[in-house]
Structure formats: C-alpha cells, structure tokens
Image 1 (spheres, rainbow, N blue to C red):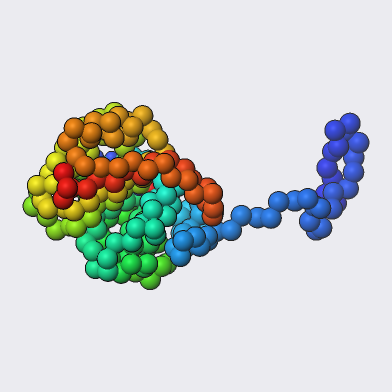
Image 2: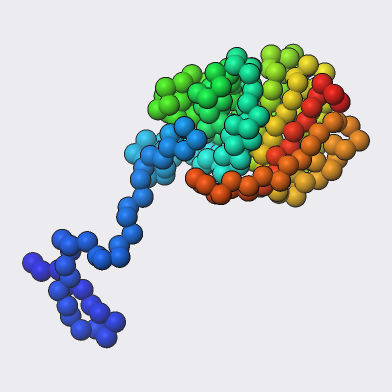
Length: 230
Ligand SMILES: C[S@@+](CC[C@H](N)C(=O)[O-])C[C@H]1O[C@@H](n2cnc3c(N)ncnc32)[C@H](O)[C@@H]1O
C-alpha cells in the first residue's frame, strides 16, 4: 500500500517516506557531554524508564541549567582535592559528579525527594564516579551533620518564598558547624534575590552576575557566602 498524504488544497500526493526531508532537523541525541560530565536527555531509555518508576515531586524532574553556572564558577574557583562537599537539593547530581570528576572532591548529594536519587545513581554510574546520597530536608540538616562538610553548594534551590528562611537558617547552622563556604547558583528568582539582600547584615558574602553562553546557555547569579569571615 502506498503512503498517501494530503497537501493544503487537499490534492493527493505520494509521500516519500524513505527519503529524509531536505531541511528536516537532525534528531536530538540521548546523551550529551558538557563540562566533562555526560548526561542523559529525556529521550534516553534509562530516563524514560526512571520517569515511569520514580516521578519526582519538588522540581527534581530534570537537570537545571543553574548547575552549569555553578560548575563554571567552580572551574574558575576550584575547591581543593578531597574537599568534603554537600550538594544541597542535588536533583540529578550533575554538579556533584562534576566536582568528583574534575577536582577529586568527596561529594554527598542531599535532597528532600528520595525519587531523585535513582537519576543521580544512573548518572554517577554513567560517569564512573561514586556520589554519597542523603535523603533529608534542608530544615533537618543539623549542626552535627553539617560539621562533616567544608563546602556547601546548590543550584536553583531557592524558588519558593519559604526557602529564603530555610536557607538563611541553614547558613547559620553551617557557620556554627565550621563549614567554610557556600556557593549557590540561581537564575535570579525573587526568593533568592531576597535571600541575598537579607544576608547583608549577617554574613560576609558576594553576589556575582554570571553568564555562560555555551555549551548550554545559562545566566543568573552566584552567591558566595564566606562563613569563616562572617
Ligand atoms: C530546581 S531543582 C534543582 C536540582 C539541581 N540542583 C539542578 O540544578 O539540576 C531543586 C531541588 O531541590 C530539592 N529541594 C527542594 N526543597 C528542598 C528542601 N526543603 N530540602 C531538600 N531538598 C529540597 C528538590 O527536590 C529538587 O531536587
């Protein structure tokens, strides 16, 4: 049977299924390697399977481009080898993987949504690294737990008004715990902007306007809190 398609004016024409259209878009890849980290796109069979099995609930449904801002900042300001890092709201864990692969840091990804961890584990395996995981809310990260880390990082984790207060209190506990720094990337969401303003009277910090034209374009702010000098 022939394939018959209709043109706008309804005339019947024979479609040429076997030949690619002249300006057909190339199909999207299911693996992308950027900043030395390989990630799976939504097309990848593993991601399709995980999405059926583990529907995430707090925006951990994809990697967010703020992670690339964070990676780029850390590329310019590299942590020392073996720095103990806690990746707040790690989601799929790409920044955790980057810090492990690139700098030889020991990274734990913490997230309130346990359903993000199968995505993190799949990416860690793909990139041949080991990432620790901790299923916990920011609110429940106590001084004792935080004292196990030198650096806390996070990409796009201040997207609700309530998270402003949650992170402010977390910074206070981090300082008490002896954490040296926090580096948080954000696409300039209002709760994050409010958080930065609120830090003025309490912590030594800087906010950098950060832009990454490629490979995946991203722009936003990088907040650096220096607990040692606060
Ligand atoms: C927008 S996603 C960003 C994920 C990842 N950092 C990235 O850049 O791709 C926010 C992540 O924060 C987590 N999260 C939100 N609120 C949290 C809380 N109160 N405690 C711990 N994790 C939280 C979500 O489950 C989600 O994985």
